Length: 189
Image 1 (tube, helix red, strand yellow):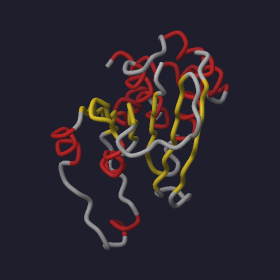
Image 2 (cartoon, helix red, strand yellow):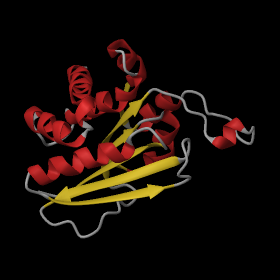
Image 3 (cartoon, helix red, strand yellow):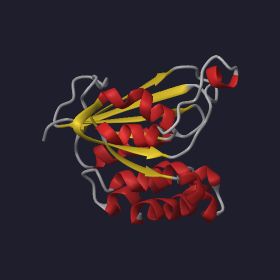
């Protein structure tokens, strides 16, 4: 199997690192060589955070090059736009339709672009979901990222039961039930 390249992008505090641990755990359970790498912009909440997960027979290094990502999981739509050039021609962006203003927009140095997901859809396969709205329906906004993982699971090489097993083993014990509910919501979308 050729190495698969996954990028998880978002802003600080959105759970990108937990997500990369889930994906890394899945690849290990699947018997693959796995490399994870975390790249922080501004580490405080609101700063850009990128995590690479690469898995395959033999993975030399953790960094995904431009134009090489099979899947980009974006927890915030401006981050999806910021990293879209990493996507392969036939890759897919799974984007959370959520706006979190970066510090440059908050301070008035930049404008938040309009129609991000529509613009991305002109060049790329984009699956967008308002995961925060779905999470609020479950009564827990914190699990929006697990809903996105459920959507992403449909576009990856692992079966449903493996996802459930790894989520159970990775998320904090008190949150297992809620995270599994969230995963199922995403998986069903």
